[in-house]
Length: 186
Image (cartoon, rainbow, N blue to C red; front, side, top):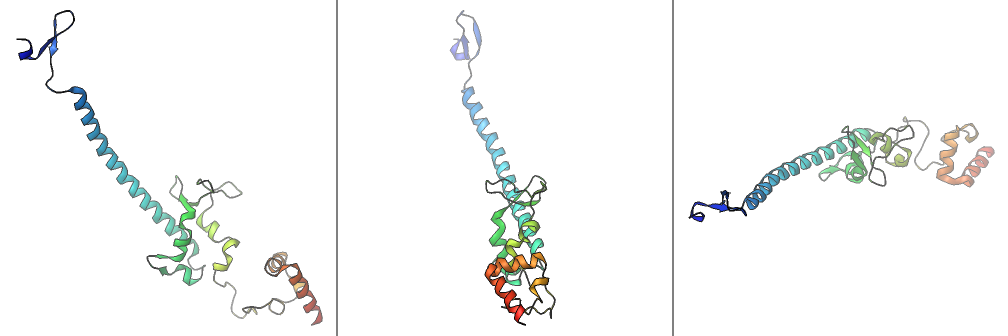
């Protein structure tokens, strides 16, 4: 009679309540899966939106840093994106403030000497990428393609330290000495 009314007895022989028709633990497990899958899909949707936003921030930071400075073939669209974006976008990440910053070797953020994060402008306009820039000198400055600098830049003895160092980096110490010798003969 008790089982027909779903009444179960405890160890003491007294009724302990109704016997459930379903496994409560199974219902809990199924509800947990259902609820967590809903949240997981929302989380994945937000992650995808954040990833797309981060890509857009990085691309726009790269383009704004080099626009008007880099040679046109680096900035004009090459397929779906400009070559400069394709070349450098994996070197950047987005910080907690939503700014594009340079990644360090360990995947963190790379910092400048003053402790601030290195931005796209800091990185892409550094001397490391000088060959990608447009020629910023005015027309008629005397510089020519392939020039050694002897006639183009005046007397090498009068050059600034930076000009001398740049020439030595390009042509070596012996090249600078040769340039001085050539200038003496004139």
